[in-house]
Image (tube, rainbow, N blue to C red; front, side, top):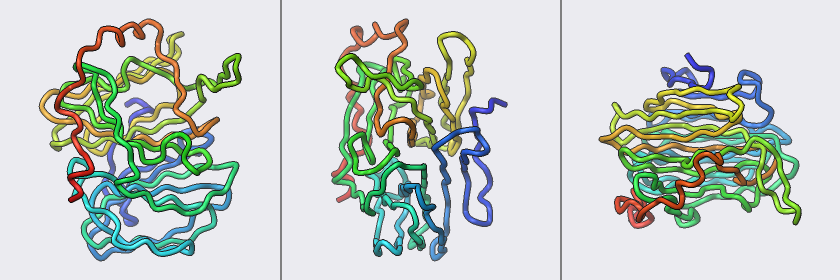
Length: 289
């Protein structure tokens, strides 16, 4: 099995069904854990000094009480296809407890950071929606912690790809820190996680991760609750026909940015795109009502 594909686990005693730890994957910055908790369950933890921490509610409702304040009645959607996200950003050195008010799925990412920023609740109305691409390469990006957010390194978006569509396309990469002649960042060096869910449990997507020199060239099939690691290289996705694809992207690296570079062999496809897919957006703020 590819080292880039982390299959979904049975839920452990701490509720964890997916996990990425820097020391296990030979990364520098980015960690993740996805938990499933039954109603009434509690999980207590502490953010590490010198790190920042983001919780994204995938489905269900919860309280998160912390030494930075209490954040109550968070979450509305039952799953990622039924509404917009709620998230909580915490700086390092904060004690917290998550109490599941209903069955709860919650994803957390944390990373070393050069700066400290205050705790912040991110509500659905704070999350901008962007429709990118065209034709069968159209997808929806819902920004939770986009570039320019008051944080150190973390970036987080949710991506919805309609049945049968391509995503993260044309293939792009962000594995070198590049600055243009004007001093503007043209590419960041980022570690990236794709955490997948599907509208139907039998859904799947294929993701290719490759470098132009052929050092890395892997094709993996992701199923519900699987994780794909992108340490470097281009990384397009295509979803199987019949159900919509969702992935949660966490990124961290040389800058709090999504600056990237298209594969020059495929950059031309942008000029061939037709109208955006009319099925999008798949989720929107009105669903919260």
